[in-house]
Length: 300
Image (cartoon, rainbow, N blue to C red):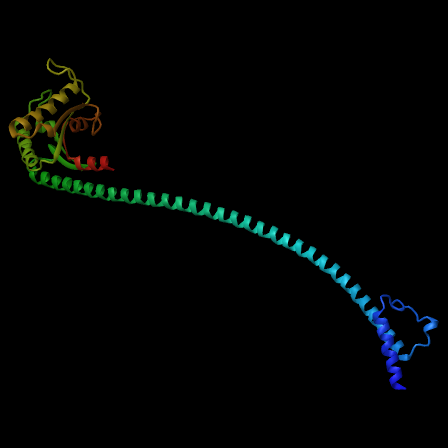
């Protein structure tokens, strides 16, 4: 009996499988005419219905998944575009920063070069200044030594006849008319010639000294057959001393300059006899040669 039932079930299953069209659609109720089917066949059909529902659910899920995949692909495309935009902005910003950095570095390099050049010039000027200061110090040393030598050499003359002092880096030997000249005359007196002889001895031993002879008078007007005014007299007196130095003591003329100031550079007031006496003078101004200083100034 069991064998017959098994054969029947197998036959029905084969019939169902081989049929192009199922006995009924998935989920369709079993027609009344097939109500007599065996429980086994019914179970198979029920299982098929369950599989059909499972397939429908799977298809539904697949559709939903496909939609999700499509949406995700869209999202991915959007994200990729956003990433591209962000990368572009980053690259642009990086380029701008790089450009600003390059500009900064260039400006820094230029400023550094300018500072280096200024520092070089400053060092050169400091060097030149130091050299100039050394030369001036040597000149001052020469001036002081010359002043000391002249003071010692001219000690035999009275202070109201002759004075020696340093002014403005130069040695001033001031000789009064009492020592050098008679009133209204440009001829040097004997005692004045003695002073000039001592002075010439010092100048001959110190040949790097320039010599300026300046004649000065008081403000009392003078007019003679020889001299038109005080200015004329002061110039001739200075020239007289220059001639003694060059002719008698062979001082090089290139070292000498004669000038007259007349009454226009007084050292005291002309309102008193003492002041006028002080103003009637001849100044021998001695200064170390400035050739070295001038050369330094030209070089720098």
